[in-house]
Image (cartoon, rainbow, N blue to C red):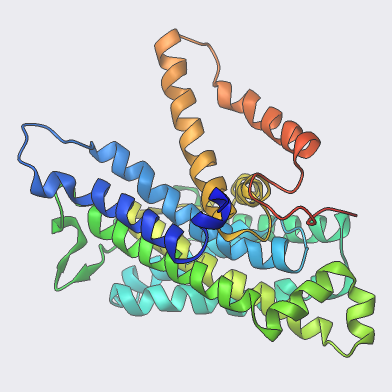
Length: 331
């Protein structure tokens, strides 16, 4: 059996869960003078899982219906600001605010997905990029969002006890929530792939005109993909904001959108395990290179150079991504 096939389905989910649980709680059961896995390591693991959720959500648009969106960070940041404002201003508990973050992002994703019905290719890239920038500058100029300073001091999630009091470093509960959400989204994505909705997505991706002529409601399914994508991106943004206890307009920046799209492209469009791989690679590599920069005393961040080089090499050598299907960009 191919290692790619082995990593799919329940085997891959079990392996990921076992590794994450082991890394998260080994310090809680082994008595040592220092951490077996330091808090910084667990911080990186959590960020990887959150961006895996963001990449999986973007995969509904960029993978399943084949539309390139550069406005995904708008949903990510909108979810963060929604839960931040609900918990700080309206004094909601975290869990209702967390769910509301996804719902608000999905509702906003409906009109933002409308241009996808009329335009495609580079035109859609420009439209989604512009929409993302609009949200960013709105957040920068509103007093209620804290302006450029953002909103600090967000509520910490709790289940009977605060997340900060669970585990040896206080990050373990956040990791478990991110893992549960990522696995649920992976399962949901797989179910969508094997359903009539997934077949409609595939028909639209391969030939929109032919799909329409066969009676598929192209407008409905495109909007559905954008709404699902926005909902889960909003949840991911909310989780990151409450973990950091801070939200800023930078979460809505085009750089974030480009990074999320790159995770999908590098890992493999339409590939669930490829989204995980892309998120982990593009979260861990910059940190490794920054440490290398400090060790050897480079005057610049090598990741800024290698990021573009990675994209060029991927587009030249394997445009469908590391774990992507071989037919993704066949045209």
